[in-house]
Image (cartoon, rainbow, N blue to C red; front, side, top):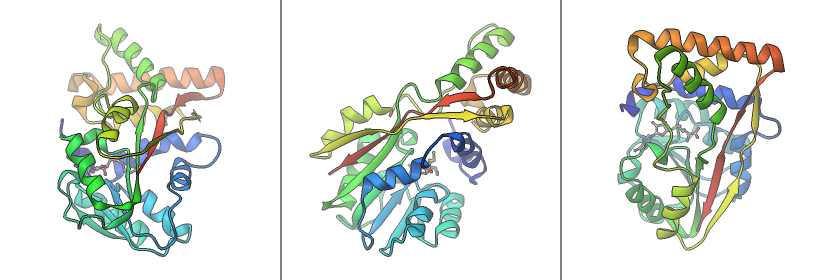
Length: 258
Ligand SMILES: C[S@@+](CC[C@H](N)C(=O)[O-])C[C@H]1O[C@@H](n2cnc3c(N)ncnc32)[C@H](O)[C@@H]1O
């Protein structure tokens, strides 16, 4: 699957991020940064920084230390720099062009599941993080967005005669694999479940979420894709009309590693 093409710009990521805006309470970014408990002057590296949500929020929270965003996608790195004012670089988390121990805090939110060699990437995150520092790695439980997956499976079963599964952000690095892999690199790994329910009020947000994924992540023939997405949106709209919203469970889990 061509992950990079999906992240050429932040348009697809922004669409997917939109679905989580309907959860109650503080945004995930703030809850992760609260756990990171970073000193205001700490040197922070955000790997797979995407469109810079964490970097921008750190600055808004008064962070005065060096901020570096790293992403494989030049488009994302540029977006993150513009959004946050942080220095950004195009690089692969598996081979970071950074000094050993440079970071007081390394962030790797929702990105390791895309990486070919996950243990190598974790070793790199450990390497660039100072011995006294910490890394905060975020991924999802296997239940993440299960309502969307179930609705999609139902639609494809009815229209295509077989239930298709969405293959995108798993299953190589969900919370269970993280629990197995992270202790190989870090002495202390603390798990924090940050999942909650997002009550999505608009069907287009759900069909947009699925439609933002690469064609081969959906397992739907190209000539049936529009029909599947339209039917998904119709069923979600019917659910919202009956219940007021379509609830989607986030299974976000943050691992604070030292
Ligand atoms: C789901 S987005 C997460 C963005 C951001 N961390 C956030 O939580 O909002 C995943 C990001 O990881 C980047 N990425 C994927 N593989 C990567 C790699 N091997 N090295 C660095 N970045 C990578 C993608 O380009 C994308 O911007």
